[in-house]
Image 1 (cartoon, rainbow, N blue to C red):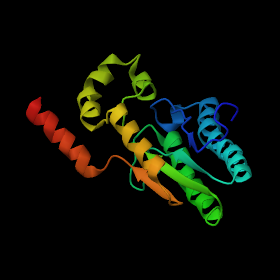
Image 2 (image 1 turned 90 degrees about the vertical axis):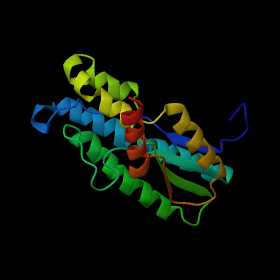
Image 3 (image 1 turned 45 degrees about the vertical axis):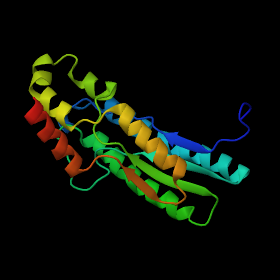
Image 4 (image 1 turned 90 degrees about the horizontal axis):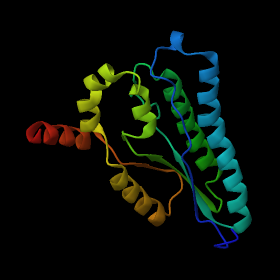
Length: 184
């Protein structure tokens, strides 16, 4: 605020995943940590941003969604992470509805699969598992720069409340898989 005088866009991008494991093997501490960071972090961040944007008379908030935010997307071992993202989809829709007549735009971002540190760290101590999934991950993963550029353009040009910008889709994933197969 001191440097630019106003904030135009706020992106809640903090999030963590549980260790890739079935529910009986996940500690209560890990469950609590994932829920607190993913859900409460986004709720509190959104609350702060809404207050600031209401005071300045405009602004846009975009909350990151992920696996679990789309019905039917299940990944074994990510029940806790997926549950938090499913809840955030409801939260994003509810906050957009609450602000339908206000000066603040609310939206959601679904970048698709990207090979981030959060994903890669799941396999640091499991090189054999990584060897089994590496090709699949590389085929279905998005390039971070390409996704970031696309989402930035969408956010900067958006004028609609309640939008959900989804970079990846079934067609794009199949195209990348076929391209990798034929180039591979």
